[in-house]
Amino acid sequence: MRYLGVDLGARRIGLALADSDTHVVSPLCVIQARVGAEVNARAILDVAATYGAKAIVIGLPLNMDGTEGPQAKQSRALAAAIGKVEGTTVHLHDERLTSHAADRRLLDRGLTRAGKKARQDAVAAQLLLESFLAIRPP
Image 1: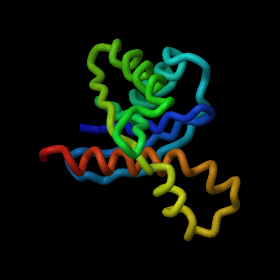
Image 2: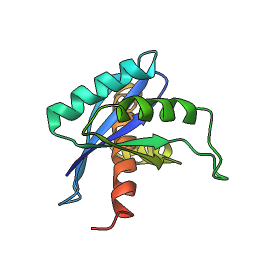
Image 3: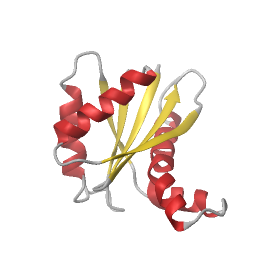
Image 4: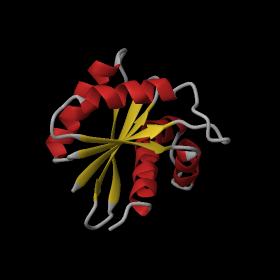
C-alpha cells in the first residue's frame, strides 16, 4: 500500500510518499496551504490520487509533554475532511521534532536558506512517514 505523509503548516504543506512493502520513503513536494480544511484536503487528495496513495498520514503536533499543540486542531480538521472521502484511510501520527530533524538533515547539503526552507516541509513529511511505518506491524 502507498502512504502519503502530510506535514501541515500555516503557509506550506509538506508531502512525502511511502510504499509499505519496501518501506522506502521519499520527500515528494510542498504545496501552498490555503484557508480551510476542505480546500487543503482536496489538494492533498489530488496528490494522493496522482500517486496511488490509499492511506494518508497527517502529522499531529504534540508538545513535549504529550499534550496537543495549538496546530493540532487544524490537523484534526484536515483529517476529518479527508476522512469523508470513501476509500481513503487517514492516520494522525505524532510529529514532535520532525521539523527540527528535517532542518538537521538539510544542514549538510549546503543549501541556501531559501532552498532549505523549500524542502524542509517535504523532508519533515518524510520523517513523519518513516516514524509511522517503523511502529506498524509488517
